[in-house]
Image 1: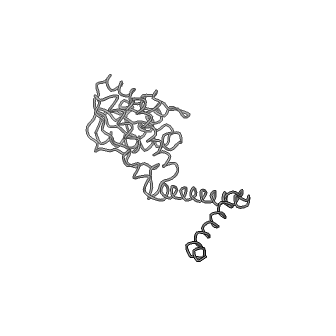
Image 2: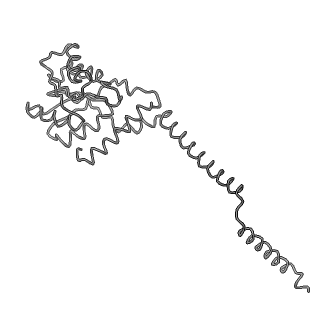
Image 3: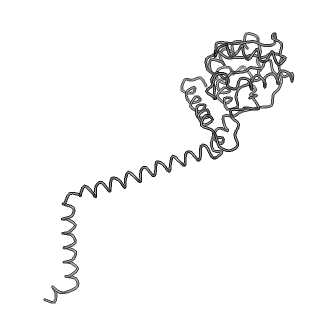
Length: 246
């Protein structure tokens, strides 16, 4: 009798009762109200996580310098030096997504290089057409800024950076001009140089991007268009690498 009333026996009996209660509970189907509350709580946690991640991405992309840190490797520039020609790659719709966006900045920079005596001629490359051929519009702007028409050559068939390089390369080889100053937008320069080095290793290319780029002006964060343009450059580099263009 004493053994049955001992603490050990009582604890054993209580454990058995708890186990039986748990087994009985596990055997009953979960009430639909409890199931609905559980699903709601899970969905709410997931939505909160998605919203938090979205807010974090927004703040990093548009309110911090992170996009420009990521973009920094794309930007390449060297001091200008004597060359045979100044090659200007037009923008087409380019990073701005608008026809002719930025070509004025590139032409102005190329004219400044020409006036400084770094090269005796300019080559405008663009196969893009919006109302008129972009290359012809660039030539007319350069002429209006004082460059003689005889110092300007046009190449009007390029459809992308790879095509631009191939066509200008053939023109340079035809005239035996082995050194150029390359003018393009600041963050396009890395891709352009990689293509030049792969497709025309005999040409010395000095990267001289436009100094003042209105599209890339910023204080800290970036705009949606700027983030998209930076991302597009990295995607384009990957696509060019897969095709063996760089």
